[in-house]
Image (tube, rainbow, N blue to C red):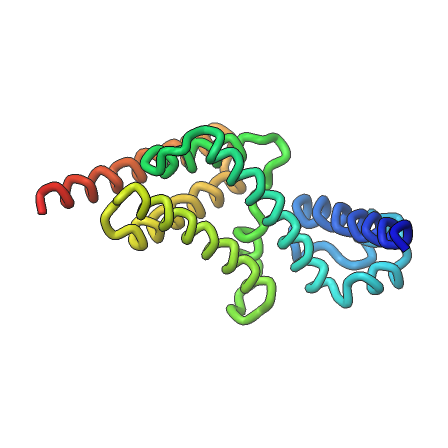
Length: 201
């Protein structure tokens, strides 16, 4: 039984790996089931045994990639510093390292938000969940750092991060690096402004 479960997991991972590579290379909408099957080296019936539709497969790819990304990001954030006030800006340094990777083509939630227009579409809800999770993380860190209006700051950070991420996909590497550096500079100004206003009050 354990061997069979292991084989099933291997087949599922093979499908997810093939789909991930194709989605990142060509985009969510441009890749068909036939191409995924060919890339994975399996029969179409095998794919549908694990995923009922392409949409379900996209959701699974996004969820797996999000889980992997969060695991890496959380560990990296704690490794670099455990001081909340510093973590707020370290977020941008970690993202800069992520964006600089040669095979980086954008986080799944950004691509899904660009490609999918209907808010109730399942893929959008998954990407919305990623954004909400990031917002919650920033809010929690800002609260621990005693930054006033932590929720508003988190909103602004999300806009900066999404903007920098988007430019990473459409601009050349030098402009991409400048985008994340500018995002960090703006974030620094936002934090200092709140701290200054709090002291005055």
